[in-house]
Image (tube, rainbow, N blue to C red; front, side):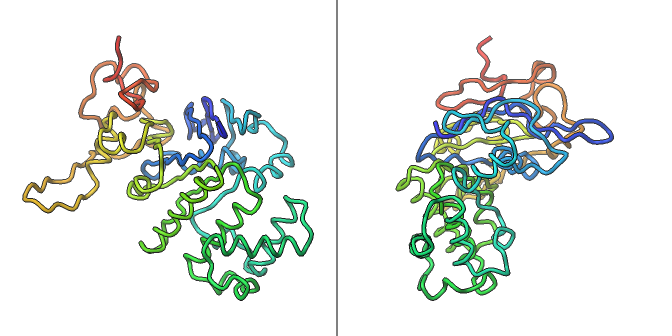
Length: 321
């Protein structure tokens, strides 16, 4: 496995008590695999990514569990050692490319700086590799655009530059947090194609964080559905989309509009209520106030991930005892 996360817990101490944003989640990602992470806003998707790469904003901290990259623990490393791993072995693509690019430097200079920081290359080799990366991510006339500044690129082109920066040092893991959100559909498709190609051609393990199930269906091999800082369901993407095992996932899939050619138009499902605030997560299953299939055990005991066909679901409906 490239990445292995065991019982990861992230907490934010506040004056009114400690808030648990990520509550004991476990998953792994293999070489060349794209793991999709989905859920409503506030489910803990982005904080999971930030915890893995050691970029949690204080006072946020990892309060328990382990994060292993290629077998070695990285959650307890000193700041400087973790900084060297970021960019070299883990690449990160954020939602807004402008936050990842320095407006004062040309994109060529930014790529060269990243390459010289992480790889032992001469200036000439850095330039050649940077041009090759720009071509690889689909920037036309790379030689010409090399000395342009970020503001001279469109949103889609900037996102490609950010992906080029993220993969410059050939990391074994790429974390992409909402990489297609602000882009139009045709550009989205190109960015998705680029991420898939990276995983396939370079054997890069990819965590794709998004709230868009269409992007997940198109890109991921497996999907983890998050709810209130926990994993509600994880399994092969086709099975989770077409035969969800957790009532929350059933509601999520039922709320996606489908193009229907026949006369059997069904109303969209709706999940009543909203996700609980971090300081008001109910005992037992966090989804119990909104669940149509809840029963006594759901209020008393928190379910762990249980086998459910080809997937695993944190739901007592799948308990054998």
